[in-house]
Image (cartoon, rainbow, N blue to C red; front, top):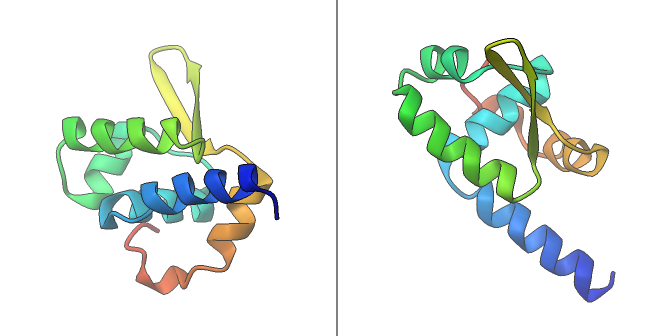
Length: 96
């Protein structure tokens, strides 16, 4: 594994190190896509807080957003991240 991969994985693990962000990522892994409003309802937190965590996940390259009209649908951005999340005990995630 070269230095670039280590730095990239460090960024991913750092972003997933918060329970809300891990829940968001696991929910997207399980369900394929979701919008901020639905994430807010499922996690029982404000849309503003979800948006803050979504921004961090996007900056880490874990998720991506695609706009459809007024709604942005978020999903896991890469197969590498999907493989990583498949190794996580998904029973810890609250999203279904």
